[in-house]
Amino acid sequence: MDLRKDRRVQYTKKILREALFSLLHERELSEITITELCKTADVNRNTFYRHYNIPLDILLEIEDDVFEKLSAVLRTSTNMDDVILLSCQLLESDKQMSKIVFTKADGSGILSRILRSVRNNFPVENQIELTAEVKPFTEMAYQFGEKGSIAVIKNWIENDFSIPAESIAQTISYLVNKLNKL
Image (cartoon, rainbow, N blue to C red; front, side, top):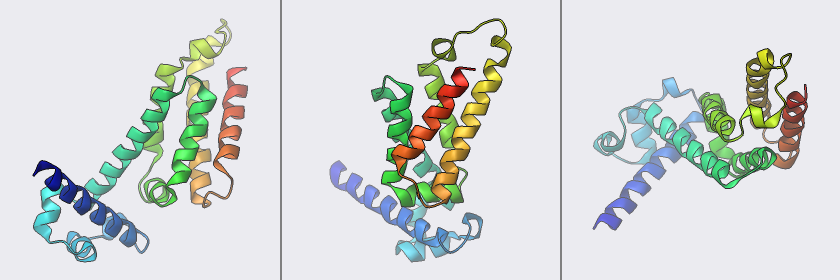
């Protein structure tokens, strides 16, 4: 019975996500009502409220799923360039979800969470030699690299993945590696 119930929950969440994606193509999240979402998904309001409180909850759940997938990539990689490449490939593999998360919501929060994890797994001290002259600028350089990487990824997604994931990853890796050598 639990497996059957779990499948129903998964199905319900899936159709609510799809309905939200469909509506987000037409308007902003703040303009989407629960009634409209339920009608599009062909579920009743009680079903919606069994899983969520507001449409934003669906988007937050999607963001958490993306974060978990990106975190899994991080756990399997031992080198920063691989993490960047695998992350870009993951985002490219589900373009619709990436576009929704990074254009309708501000997906930079997910990327910031991932980059904090990257920073913990690949400490700056292991990447560059911290001389007395460089040490005061390390945090600024890291922030610059983080925000710059996020901007490149968001721009890539907003431009409909016009460049292959491998090229974007190569560009980000090049810039981050150059920054580490300053």
